[in-house]
Amino acid sequence: MTLFTFDDMKKIKRETLGGLVPLELFRSVRLIGMYQGLPMKGKNTTLTVGREIGKSMPVESLEDVLTLFEELKIGIPKIIERTENKIHIVIEDCFCEGLPVNEGNMVCDLEGAILEGALSKIYEGKINIREIKCNVNGDENCEYLIHIS
Image 1 (tube, rainbow, N blue to C red):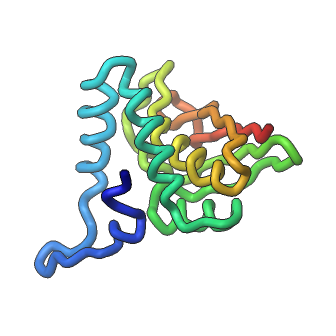
Image 2 (tube, rainbow, N blue to C red):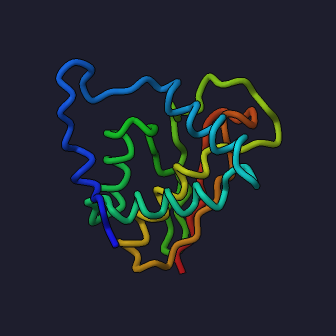
Image 3 (cartoon, helix red, strand yellow):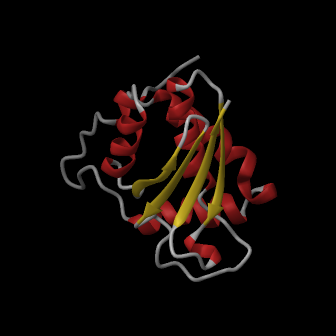
């Protein structure tokens, strides 16, 4: 049962406050509410939520996904390597940029799941994505390795 679509999310009618909310609110929901507040750092929730968001996006190609990712200000994705079965993507200016380094923690699983959901539409569900680097872990950028089977 689909109550809302991605297109529904664009219907904003807030005359005083407009369509933007501060990044610190989004970070608080993600990292305090979900990452710290849910079992297993919220992984099951963020994977399910992210995949559903990605599947609802109006995309038809990898390029569409990357463009939308940047338009939504999730980050600036760049392809590092692309073969028939693998795509390696770096995310510059990710939502977690500037947060304190906390080695051993990678917090951008929701964003990876959004990529996975969107790409699963294009590659007919045959996607496996893994976050391999994260700013919060102390890495220069966030990165994802995508396997297509």
